[in-house]
Length: 293
Length: 155
Image 1 (cartoon, rainbow over the protein chains, first blue to last red):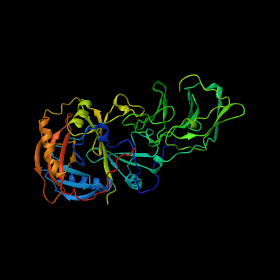
Image 2: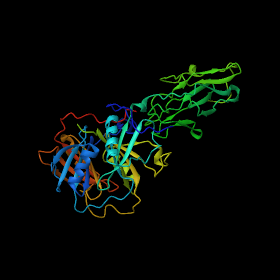
Image 3: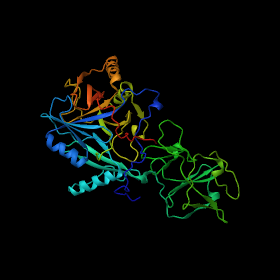
Image 4: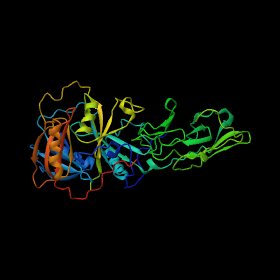
């Protein structure tokens, strides 16, 4: 899969995934209500204020607006969350570790940030390059004092079906598949699943945010490594709290050749809200398989 | 208008990530996100890192490998000497409730500190989580302003 560098142009952020609050799943009430601000120590307030305003793109509210005892600057995001930069004489440069914060932008703002950083001669990189779902974008940044940040966005393509150009894929004789078999087809990007009631061709794009699902044989489920969604062998989201799966995995139509081969038409995709036995294609022999699906 | 919509998450560290998770759940009312990275890292590489959600904010909790004790300086209000401080807000009416909750759970805190009236904050209290990370809870004078909604997951 080719990694796209920039999202498609839009000022809208799509419903994005991986993060979110679901206190109803825990049964516990939330004590604090929302994130308010991040306090960041800096050595030179003028330099850092300019960096957070001009490089990151935060709005500057003003100086010394809070009870911080040291000189400080208050900057704000569109959601009212703030970054408060506090000048510190005893500042120690942060060690290289896993600590970081992430700024979320619209796709268009991200594109502007990309151009801005490139124009400044920065090497644009992402520590997780190649390990993000399609439509997820991220740039690593260091502020003037070595605090690690990420600039991130989610493009509209993260929720759009990505068609294959494989056309009709011949998966071989139907009789070769036993009930419970799951076979990946890289050409066409789908899994062929033999259920007791027939065949399903499950598209591999995760319906949550366009990761690529893999079959985990030991667990009898499909798993998306990007936001940890899982689906059963019918392509239905596994019924556990916190599963980030969207709707069921999409289907491709399955037919059978005169020779009894399984044919999957990857040029067509079937969206569905739930699994129904009628979705499984029954081979001409009609032989229900022996094992449990 | 800013170029940034929100601050979406932080990666933090502590010697015992489970203790931090429990602190967020028990003290701040956070929720645990079920991820594969609790015990292994799938295809992303790096250390195991559980995730916790507090309100509209996500913490990714990494093991602290520095071996540096974090509580030995006795500081409660900090986060400016090479670290950061995370601040959450509550309504003014519920601000006292937070202090009571910290007291009941034996979490030492400093404050309340009153902020200047010309700024966006009302009052704050300061404390540290189970990993020594700096925290603040405040009420905000600008609570009535309609900012853009924080984009959190629907999925």
